[in-house]
Length: 389
Image (cartoon, rainbow, N blue to C red; front, side, top):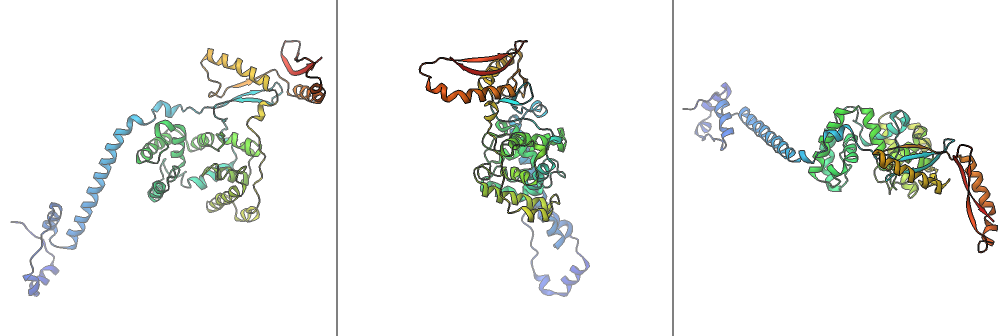
């Protein structure tokens, strides 16, 4: 026969109230409820323990389900070798003999900038806007995830509810993780982010993120973005320029300062307000500059080859042959090529050709033009021009 443990108050109430004695004791329908009632009697304590038991059981089942589901995704995650040696697909850059950039060869317009070569304003704008708990979490911002995941799925924003580490995981391993907003993608993103955090420091993760993120119009990484939109090195970017570039990450076309300057200005101001909240920007600076227009210094990605395009193409052909023979890819391996071309002599040769062009056009039907190459005593090409006779 089951034993019941009743408190003194319950016993006193039972014997002093006839209606209570006549009332039929209700037995819980579930085994868990009956277990706790047998242990504590019909009291609030038994009901509380019953409720907690169901919560714990639900949690165990959820963890078991997620764990089992994760096992099915293991084969789809990036391998450890890829985590330790990510493929960044860096552009190969060719320079003139006097140090000017001649051309870039790449599938994606991207060059590397180390952490120390990036403006602190860019770094502060990034974590303040994208992941303000970046320096305190281990790859996943659990609080941010729990509050933002529902909105992320409803709005279809792949960046929503993602830490910087999770976004980096998606940038590096797009094929393995995918871009579609699904539960599977989010879980793979989380696991890969934790692996990245275990392998790299926070500074290294920031560096990798800023060198792989897409800034629109085939511009990848902070070095290419700083050069294209502001004609600067990443370390030279000021507060306004840094906030503008970080603001573009939400939607690279909508907030592109070249296409939608007013949208870019408003988004820049949003980024600056986030920086104020995290104490990395003064409110006085914001008030002084919030109405400033976005000032860009556009540099076309193709302009680097306009100095001597024919020469740059010949360099590409020779570099391509060398790379194939030595196991490199000039479009992904970030090679650096130093050529014999003198940019000053080339500019003078081009200017001379341009000044004679009107005359050449008048006699083009009767004259024959051929290229003239200036070669020094070593046999190196210094410039290429056009000669007519």
